[in-house]
Figure 1 (cartoon, one colour):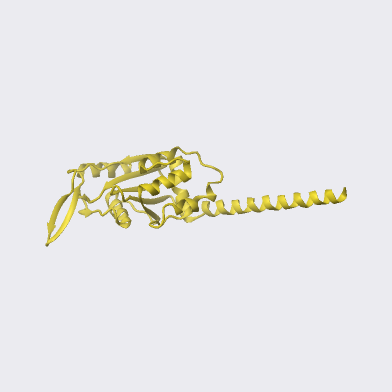
Figure 2 (cartoon, helix red, strand yellow):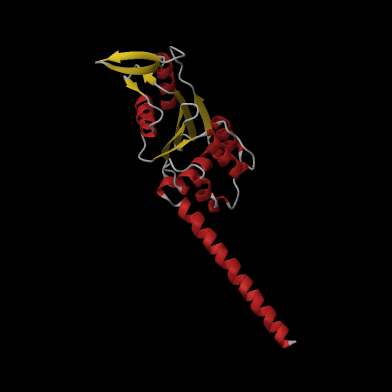
Length: 225
């Protein structure tokens, strides 16, 4: 009888240690993300390049205003107010083009260059259902109820965005968390021409989709409110 009790005590002790160890590991994982510079920074910029559609999305998270601004740009966008052109295949240009347009910057920037297949896989990992449209994915993330164990999966979710990404688990957590608790505004700068215009300068050819100056100014003014 004593042996049985002794065995049960040891089993119970092992279970308590295992549960306690998991609890400590979970707390450290979530605490590391919550206290990270990426997560605590008030203003963070993100860029997503949807290479199958030649579209770029610039996302400004501004917790001081409790707002998230999403700007969509087609390939070869040209801003006549700044005389800057955009090659959406270069995510760093997405940042410089967008930040010069809205006249606001951030020292925290993260990007991902993704295909429709990657967007679908990312969506399935999080929701259990595929969604290949990036804007629909953002809307679903904004309406998603956060789960207690999300902090254990951010690193895995980022793996679906590789290899062309600079996202960290804390950066992804920041984006998902802020989408769920802030208002989101989408902007689509108006274009003067639907198709790219070919420009030849000094013997070099450039393609440009001219953005409407009034549309740009309206977006800039709205974000600065």
